[in-house]
Length: 72
Image 1 (cartoon, rainbow, N blue to C red):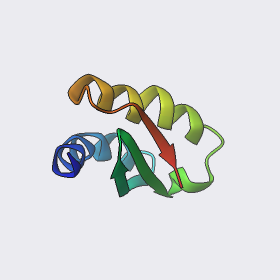
Image 2 (cartoon, helix red, strand yellow; image 1 turned 30 degrees about the vertical axis):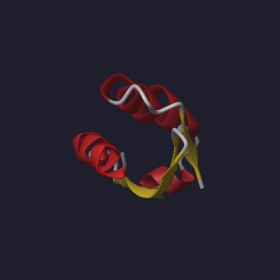
Image 3 (cartoon, helix red, strand yellow; image 1 turned 90 degrees about the horizontal axis):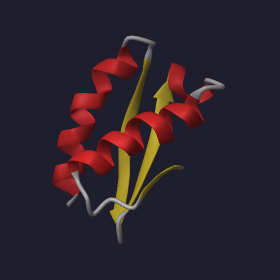
Image 4 (cartoon, rainbow, N blue to C red; image 1 turned 135 degrees about the vertical axis):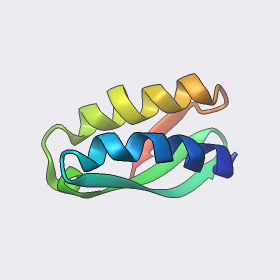
């Protein structure tokens, strides 16, 4: 499943890059995807919304086994 998640994150990264940020995959375990927001996303006050309404929503649409996405 880690490879599937990485493929979806490749689609998400250009959207984050427009605002000077990115996302790194840390771990996939039991349906939980752990990511690290980097660049401008790391300190952005909207990062929680980006994580839940953006990254998590897209991952769940593309990979039904994903239960949640958390930032580490």
